[in-house]
Length: 341
Image 1: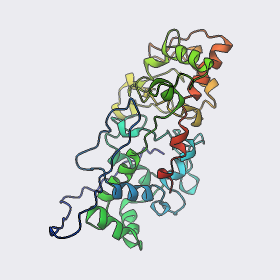
Image 2 (image 1 turned 90 degrees about the vertical axis):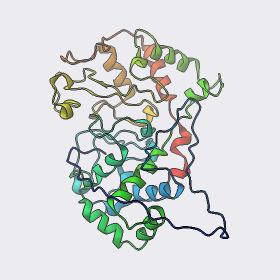
Image 3 (image 1 turned 180 degrees about the vertical axis):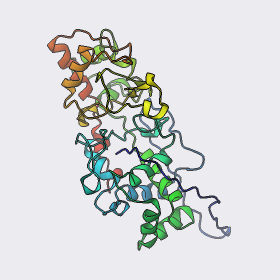
């Protein structure tokens, strides 16, 4: 889920309390969280003020699925980011408390640990800030942060868990860092495309999927011009000509520049077959619709990317391209029990 309301951040100053241990006591258990990264992935960037620990990740997972963090205790982060569909939402617009809906389609959370900014307009610089926004979002979980913290403090189990992880009572500092730590573990990189490229299994893709991969990577489609790298995104903002007039102005909501109207962050294509509907507003229902949009060249908006030119593909080539996109599905990711509540 995403929100456009202002996020009130609670900055907590002070170090975590530590306890000296006598040399004669039993050895301390290593609580460091170690990433198991797929072939071809770079090291996960982790901020110095939020080191990864197993206990923090476990607390973050519990908070991710915790419904008391919504006003009426009916919605959690996991309500709109479902593991079975790559932590995305199959509804065009996610439904929050009291039936409220936003104006953007909920994206997958896969590999967001690598994102240099968050939300489709790039309006938030860190994951630690982003995770607090949906909790306070009026059409999302709609809970004042002070009340959210109070609920955690009054819970029979959370105070002890926060003390174990952070050495302090539940607060916004710990809430944001635990949620961010869990979401950083959502790594997806074991699709059949990965098996073909990085694991040496040349039988992992069908002839149609291989043809589709060639179309994806070369002219005239050149999909890889934007959807590149191991995350299949270049993290740029582009206007793809979806509309001639944009109700949601995208990046321009942040920069207030006319040249940014209709520009949105290029999304990852990993698990894309699991995450319909598509585009920032969920206006395209199928991958076939998406292919047709790019083949057509889109609307002639003044800010449309020069890369969106329109091109010709045969019916078979369109099928091949869609088949390749479907091969980006990571079934291990959507069935990983470590992510389940």
